[in-house]
Image 1 (cartoon, rainbow, N blue to C red):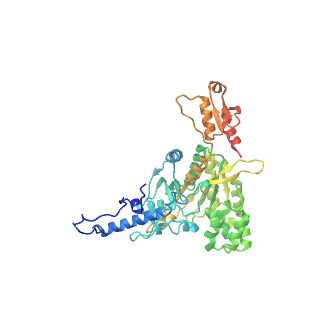
Image 2: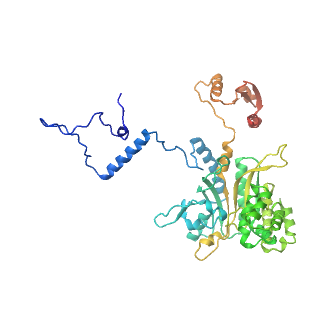
Length: 475
């Protein structure tokens, strides 16, 4: 058997014996040539690297890991098809509300992005110096949009933008949190009557979540002016408003006791101030709560809070006309930690249905968020000219992850689709249930559900099939 040494693996097969030089002269001696063939130094360096790589491989060297970077993933055709359907539904709604699409570079100047995201600035992917420009990958689509408006001197626009953004975050793939993900943004820029664009953004969120039939949801709304007013009447210095706001924003993930501990231990607030904040930020309701706060002895004397509450009352009046207040909650715990928000803020969350162990529905994740940012464009305009803006971002990756976890089904396509062959396929591939629809089932309006393991069959009304399968799949 011929054994190939490292040089053979490097792409060049040498004979097993010594390589002979020129023909031996009569009576002369054989001389083995050790000289290298002529060639560029670079070629010899390349060959040396190949030899070293081959030697490492022969010596048990490990091959490069075949994996995607942390917080990213590939999408097979089935995933892409589902994502395309989701995006089409979202974009259809955006267009129905009169928005036009734009696109911006995935790269932005680093100075464009820094200082806009509060504590989340540390999550920006910064790149090394590229020929004299300090660059970063875009963190969201809002700041690039504001830069676009200022650079092109646009003062009135309805736009949508669907593109990937990048965040150096701790990924949680089961909850749809990645380092590379799609955002679907809708924004209204320009001067309009108060709260009309804000109400339209909330209407869009309501339409999209209703159309996608993801389950019950609630849209929380608040106003940064109300929050700042709360901080002021609780004795918080203005220099700590933003950091305190970032801590309040964690109330959807942490109990109040932990949030209070962070306020006192890390943010330097007094225990009394933290307790006073807690009396406000744990409130939620509707128009009644707005009226109650307008009569609050302290908040009613704060200019910012009074403005915010007045606009919130007007917003609820428009939402009542839209017929969607049943899905809206005025929630003082909502803070949204990004620095650029100046007015109304909102966030949509899916709710877990009530059961015997839970007194009221609980949130299972945010699927949309946004708010008003009236000063962001002015940060980029050379003359500081402001363009009022409000917008919403749909969390398409979170929605995609939710749909992925839903019941999966397939059909066995055969030229001769005999039932026994299809049931055998279920057994071979581990499919737990088979839904059988024949002529009799069509007549009766039922589906025959077969437990593949026990071979038990039961007729289920067609409209109850999904609920029955989910019930049986529960651990």
